[in-house]
Image (cartoon, rainbow, N blue to C red; front, side, top):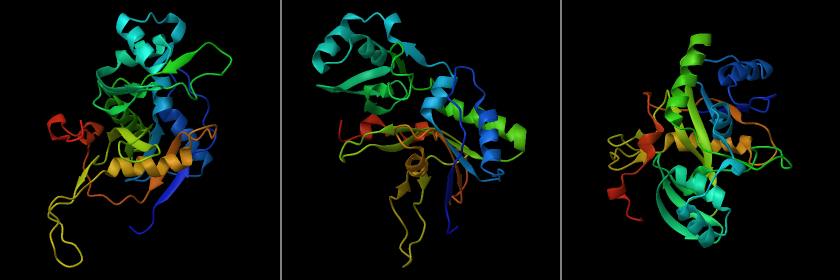
Length: 254
């Protein structure tokens, strides 16, 4: 392949708990005059997956624990928000004013356990926050299966979120759920232009796709949470986002 095409699907409604994302994707494809083909990939924003799966939390219903109150004093955040962060946290790694960096129960190292306030509910309504999907790999597999049932096509699914990076400024799109494609592609043993066989090269394929799609999805009021991708070169296979997580004993920066 020498061409990669990304198309943000139009007319995606505000997602509510229980919504059928497969049906919404199919309507979006029709509105974009696209027909799914084998090998296509759909990148779906984590927020709409979490909303469809009922992962919204109303802060007034949250009772902060003593640890959440202590954490709130350290970072200056609402203690109820800190409590929701702790629900999805395996280990608190760093805390400073305005920021909590944790390892989540999913294995991600990220700010605030991925708990988000933006694009969750109208600003003047009660305060709501949104948790990550309970198992985004499972969500991706289920969505892939629903689309296969409706189209008989074998497509890939990437559920993406926005994370900061330890060594570079600026957040980028990353994959937190994957189905139907390798999450990490191993190029070791492949020859380069001069016949040298690669020794250590592995590529974060799903993260690259997520980052490209996030350019179209945007971060504010764009309303483009689903991106159709065609032309991604890869070796095939069925991966999972959990493969992206580096084992703690191999992580030299923690």
